[in-house]
Image (cartoon, rainbow, N blue to C red; front, top):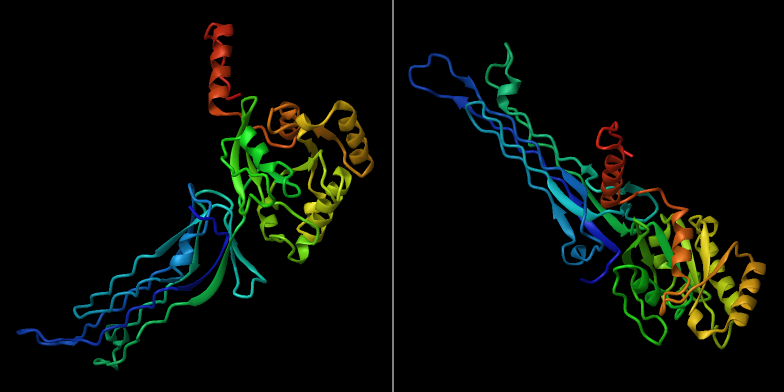
Length: 358
């Protein structure tokens, strides 16, 4: 499935049905009179956040959404049928922006979240509703109110607990493949990752979602490389893992590489520069202990709070890094772990202890 995190769509709620002009003409009924019913209400435009989606690709091929119109009123005081709402399903993490992208109109952060975005028009009044003691044969009716229409932007910000950042070729794809169920592309050239990747990490009975975004280069905030458009996907992360290639590059050593990425995060804004981050020297298997220690001291001097040495290829140092990550996350122990703990308590207490939800 192709990844798409922005889409512009047109929305229009249903117009109300027109009221009817009708009169009773029944044999053997002495007095007739108006009996035109009201029109039905137009359909609403409803957005709903659903699980199992992590792209807006469907909105590339379907860009116009129009809710049905309400039914028209009929004789014998019959009201027109109200139209059903048009439900548009979006991934969790989707934001609805105004046409100029200046205002956030809605933000979906939970599965099942549902909002009525545009309301359908009210149905028009039939002539029966105009009948009075002095106006016994009204011919007035209303056509029904039109629906609302709007162009909006959909922007997806993937919901992840931990974000993975770094320069191209820092080993982010190898790392996320090693610690999660992701299957990111790995290559010996820059920008093997072109779109964000998500993976679920399981460590010590706990789970969290890790997001890998394309590598940042100097000037990304001004559009260099892939730019900074994918940084929005780590705005909601609780902590960032900054991977630094211990082998360095032709132009920069690890300390310089860390500085470049940190400056791009600050230039992007959205408070990314203040997010907790864990710096990890990656590709430990390609360096000796003396070199690792020397670069660790350089990164600490450059502003890193704590530096981990890891290898995505061999798995060395990764458990210690994941332990540090768990300290920033809420305790969402898996159901299996809780069930095992309950069984353990029951066995120790002989099954007679008071039940607790842990």
